[in-house]
Length: 280
Image 1 (spheres, helix red, strand yellow):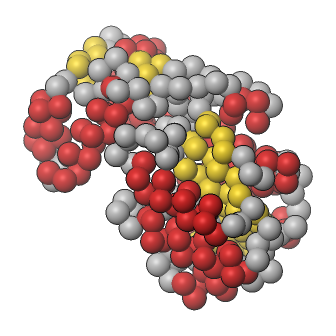
Image 2 (cartoon, rainbow, N blue to C red):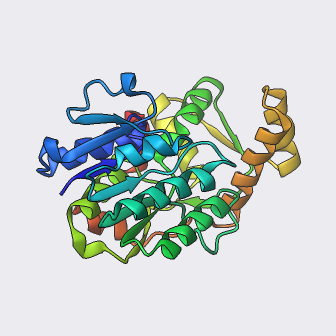
């Protein structure tokens, strides 16, 4: 069985390849797809050029591939078309398994990021490909900048209110991807994945305080206050509005659910918040 990991030079992709190797996969059966192959040094597996915007590169990368991990792209607004290009090529190539990293409750969520993931899941279903959907909650590493800023200022400011986030470390999600790539018993399943603990931003402030060795205040912002603060910090209106919408989704509970599925898949507890933040 030959496995293609797309986006392999990204932070998640590298960890997936590492997890596959740690779980005994033969390096010769793993192919790393990368838009910039010069960034693939040290992966320890074969590397091919794969650009989500270049169908020819996708078709070439899929030659001889049995299973594909489609790691969702990072270009918001363009991802549905990019993902569909991979799905179409995988269908044409007759791959036996497609695994996709989606978003929590992608087909029903009001989260601003959800629509592109919903459309991708629908394209996968329409393709008829044997598939596994991994609906990853937030990565703890997403908060590395908040840790640095709050450690300096003593303030964690957000519009997330009392919303909870069931985050886990990228390594946790990468291990889950490796598990389902190596075991065909997961085909047809959709997994809602998250950390064992759903924490509040008050908990996040306390975790940062523990790491930084100083008091950290959690300051709740209204959407208007947050928008103004982000624009004052240099973000353009569209990007600032996107961040505000994300936090509004968190406040509404979009990332709060956790049922232990991720821990069961990887066979261990997920990485605790403080530990994950320290590593980040």
